[in-house]
Each structure stands twice: as C-alpha cells, then as structure tokens.
Amino acid sequence: MTEVSLGGPAGTRGTRGSDSHARRTGPGWYVKIVLMAAVNALGLYGVWTAVMVGSWGVAVFLALAVAAADWVYFSRRMLPAKYLYPGLVLLLAFQLFVMLYTAYVAFTNYGDGHNSTKADAVAAISAQNERRVEGSETFPLTVVEQDGELGFAVLRDGEVVVGDADTPLEPATGSDDGARVTAVDGWTTLEFAELVSRSAEITELRVPFSGDPADGGLRTQDGSLGFVAAPVLVYDDATDTFTNANTGVTYTPDDHGSFVSADGEALTPGWRVGVGFENFTAIFTEDRLAGPFFQVLVWTFVFAGLSVVTTFALGLFLAMVFNDPRVKGRKVYRSLLILPYAFPAFLATLVWRGMLNEKFGWVNEVLLGGAEIPWLTDPWLAKVSVLAVNLWLGFPYMFLVTTGALQSIPGDVLESARVDGASRWRAIRSIVLPLLMVSTAPLLISAFAFNFNNFALIYMLTGGGPHFEGAPVLVGHTDILISMVYSVAFDSGVKQYGLASAVSLLIFVIVGVISWLGFRRTRTLEEL
Image 1 (cartoon, rainbow, N blue to C red):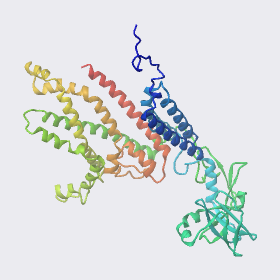
Image 2: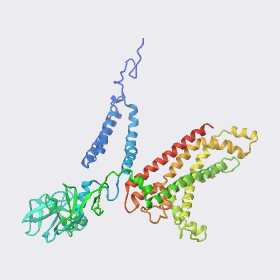
Image 3: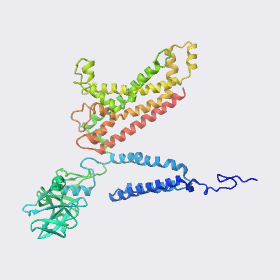
C-alpha cells in the first residue's frame, strides 16, 4: 500500500507539527516576530503606565490581552482565533467596557464637584481654604525647577531650604546673597522671562512648610516674596471631620459624598459615591427635570417615527415612479436624486442652518421675499424644520433601498395579477407592498434606531433649541434623548455625568425593546 503524504514532500509522511505554519521560518515568520515584539512592547508599556497612575483594572486587562495575543499567535492550534482576536479585543475595549462603565456611572453622583476620591477631596478642601497666617514672616523667595516640576527655595534661619508641591521644605546645598537664595544644587533657577510665562503655575503652587499639614504651606503671588498660608478648615483624620478654625463649625461626611455642617452647608469639592437608583428616580420625580424630560421623550418618538415614515414614503414614491419603463432618462434622474446622500450629513445640516436663518437665510430672503419667519427659533417651526431637513437627508437612502427591492419582485407575479383583473392600486397594496416590506422591514427598524439617536442633525441644526425656560439643565424643544444626554453631561453649567449615564441606559433599553418587537413583527411578514 502506498503511503499518502499529509502535506509534506512527496514520498514522506509529514507530521502535524513539522508542517505547521507556526514552525515555518520564512519571511512571513520574521514579520510576525517583529509585529508581536511591537505588540508586547506597547502592551507592557501600557501596563507600566496604568500601574503608575493606579489604574489597576486597565493594567490587568492589558496584561491579559498581551498574554492572550502571545498564546494565540504562537500556538499551532489557534488558527481561527488568529482572525478573531483583534476584533474581540476591540469589542471588549470599545463596546463592552464602555457599556459597563456607563452603567456603573449611572449609579453614582459622578459630575462637577464629585469627580474624584475622598482623599483628593480632603486635599482640595484643605488647599482651597488656606489664608495667610496673620503676622507671619515674609520670605524672599526663589522659584526653581527640577525635571519640569516647580519648587520654592528660601532662607530659613539662614539655611537654604527647598521643596515642591509634594515635598516639604528641606535643607539643601546652595548659595545665597544673604537675603535670597541664588542657586540650589540639582535645581535650575528660573529667569524673569520664565517667571512671567509660568506665572499661573507659580501662583497656584503650594509647598508644604513642614511635614505637619497644620503648619500650612509656602505660597507666593508674584514669584519673589513668599508667605505662610494655613488652612482655615482643619481636617481631623481621627474623627473624619473638618472644623473651621475661625467659627468652630464642624463638617461631617454624608451619604452623598460631601462634608456637611449641622445647618446643611456643604463643602466643595465632594467625592464620588454610589447613589443607587437616585439618578433614575430624579428623571421622573423632580418637577423641574421631569417636565422637560417627558417632552423630550415624546418628541424623540415623534421625530424618529415621522423621520422613518416620511423618508420611506417619499423614497418609495420616487422609486416606483422611476421604476416605470415609460419614464425617459431614468438613470439621470436617479443619479440626481441620490446627490443629497453623497454630501456629508453634518455639512449639509450646517448649510441648511444658514439657509433657514430668520434674517439672512436664503429661504426667507429669496424664496419668501424677505419674510422673517423664525424657522429655528419658534418651538413648532423648529420641529418642522428638523423633520424637513431630515427628509432631505434621508429620502435618497430609502429611494435606493426601495428601488432595489422593487426590482427584485418577480414580474410574472404582477403580470398574473393583471390577468386576473387586479387594478394597479390593488396590485400595489396586495402584492408589491407586502413583498417590499419583507426585505425592507429590518432596514426600517434600523432607520428608526438611527433616528432615535440622530444627535448630529439636532446638534448641528438647532442645538436643541429653543430652550425650555426654568429647566435645571440646558435642554430645548427640539432636543431628543441623546442630545439631552450630551447637554446634561457637557453643555449645562454643572456637569452631571451620573444623570447623563442614567438617561443613556434608558435610551439603550427603549431602542432594544423596540428593535426586539420590530424583528418579531418582521418574522410575521416573512410568512405572508
């Protein structure tokens, strides 16, 4: 019996390992080694950087990702994983992590005034409530620099001492002119021009006067004279309270991440803590927030629904017209109709914003003879404008989709209907539309989900305005939920990331439920 070679040279029986692509040492193997070396180097650098800033979760993820990459690309049994690995890593980093982190933030008070840890809040309160110690000595001061970090050098009891933001004043080797330090070993003395260019950093710098926080810190207002500033609010680590040294008022920590006095005065900043479902209940129960939220919620459904219906109706109408062989020059007309689809949507939206300007827009000036119609500033007209612009942007897509779907309907079916005496409208209603919906229903569902989160159109055209009066957040009549999230997180005076994340989760749930119900309905259409 002749022995059959399994991939090896003729006449030899190759083993799985000897012929494995993982053991081939051609040019491709060396390229792989170089690429994997780069991946390992970048990954380990990321791990080291994450450890340095205390991001242990990121460090663990990067370490596991690098280890998995080495295992996958140097293994002989992981061929499918070699193609899946990059996508899986990106999915975990940019999809799953973002979703989980958003869910985590939704249950916290994360936002302005509560964006860090309790230790950072204690340090910030202590530093922000410092006052110059009455009757304290004024020190001729020298600003010095070491590895990019600024420090202060002064003469204390005739001895040169130097320190920076993290290190208290300590004796150092240097020289002086009897009144001021002129040089410090290991430090660079800043010249006048550098003092001017870095004046903001210098006035913000606080160098601890000693290892005892109660002694205060050395500060300056002009870079030449220093003074001792001590905190008015003194933190007691044993009782975990702040006490005002002037008034004797004590501030204790509460459940919402703030030090609060007995009469309700809260110190800022606070720190990030979990607040349970408080952000979710605030949306529905706070009078000033619930009203605008429900108006935005209703408008979001109306906007998404009408956007799908109007663009689909116009696209289908035009597709049926130009699908008729009696129309001459159909290719030219079809090319012209999809032109709006060729322009970037956000640029086209900005153009429309200019054309709809109340005083100088092309629509009022040219089409309406100088009429000053408030297309973007009146609540109802602004909504009409948003729908009209979205119709102009969206109908070419529906035109392309329905044109393809119409051409896929068998002609003999329509011919049979005509032979049986069906009118044109009956054929459209009973044959064309049901067959059309089978192929386009999933696209309509995805179009609804897209318009439900059509942030770019709202932000570029109206900015959500005109805005509601008296609302605690900056939202308006044309805001949809996703633009409301952006406004709450970034545009409002006080950024509330926890509240914005809670609204984001609601959007996710709503879109998920609607998509699930829509696809269930699509299965019914497939049975027609």
